[in-house]
Image 1 (cartoon, rainbow, N blue to C red):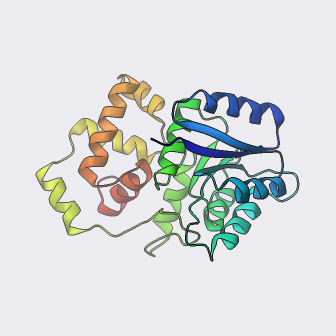
Image 2: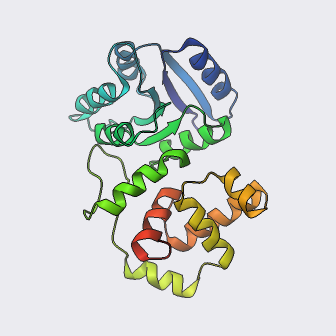
Length: 238
């Protein structure tokens, strides 16, 4: 299997070097380029065409949001343009989160995120899914509660807020969520990480992950945020 190729665009030298060293140790991942500013980052993206670009919002020349906008504009006329963008940032404000997705970012990850979760985020992003850090998931969910439209528009991301399909109702009738799964789903909607769910539920993180997989399978979705959105839309949780 071909390694996931990554370009890392981060202006803080120690952070960039630390991320690069950590990602290079992960089987199946290769950092093919690194940049300390946005313009250099755009050049590297054009040169390497990586699977995933990890982009810091706070770059010194053009910010990460403008970088993503320029990348998407450049890709607009290319049939093979498939660079996925994972935004990496210290900012969890609603304005920053929604601006990142509006620009065309696919996923959003906080810098404080554990490396294991970052690896998951990179893999999910590469596979075409949107990975949203639990710390900012509540921001997206607030938009879902406020927005009657079918999706939060912008870029090629897949953060959908679809209505409840009959097939979903049939699945839950055949394979209903257990009391424990409903409890965990409520914590997911609240924006809790797996570690926080484990602590609150007095179970291991491994057990949480098993429950989360079961919840996603039963709900017919491929990530936690979509499960939370569907749970709100269907009235499973409020």
